Amino acid sequence: MILTMVAMLSMTTAFAEDEKVAEVKNAEAYELNINCDKLAQTLKLDGFQKDAVENIHKTFASELMFAAHYGNSDRDSMVEKAIKNDVKSMRRVLDEDQMHTYLRLLNATINNRGLNK
Image (tube, rainbow, N blue to C red; front, side, top):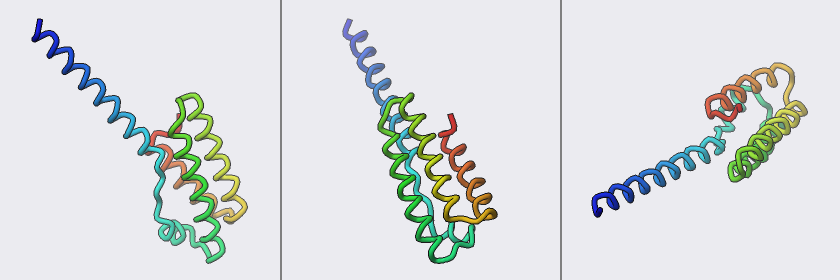
């Protein structure tokens, strides 16, 4: 009887620990820290564009972190909305070639983090 109780408590603890690890990994996927200097160099941004891109990125990162705290159905729509807002804002600042490069980088980042559901 005591061995059964110990086994059940061990399994419950392991299960709860797995949930916490999955939750942390999930939250980390939505944490979008990029090197804005490298992005500016890659996109060949001027001073105005760099400032604007940094501000747009801060907003995008905030929206993603906000989405990380919601349930799956709400989260997916919030992530999609954040991406659309980011792309729309970047189109106002970047020229066509810069935008093409940015979209490739954004798409790769979203795919690598598993946010493309």
